[in-house]
View 1 (tube, rainbow, N blue to C red):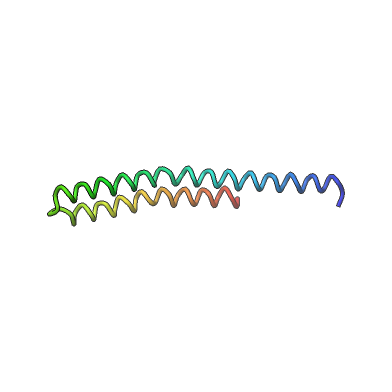
View 2 (cartoon, rainbow, N blue to C red; view 1 turned 135 degrees about the vertical axis):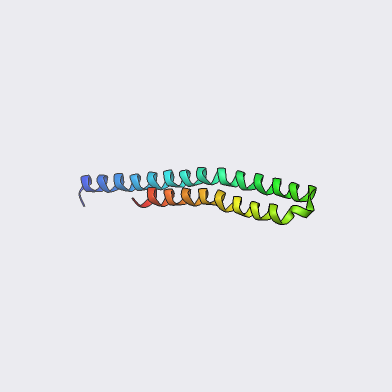
Length: 87
């Protein structure tokens, strides 16, 4: 293998490493928002159920819907991570 081919291969490897690092950073940042959102949502739902136990069923249903929608944001971030990693 010539020196130029070896340098080109190292540059390609470095580009792949940078892409993986960038994709990992993107997914990490994408997971922060939903994590905070789900924590806040569950905390408020527990507080609502403690204040009005008779409406706990409705609050719990609404909480699970909110968790599902918020978790969808994290899944979108994961898809972006995969796209940045392999495309």
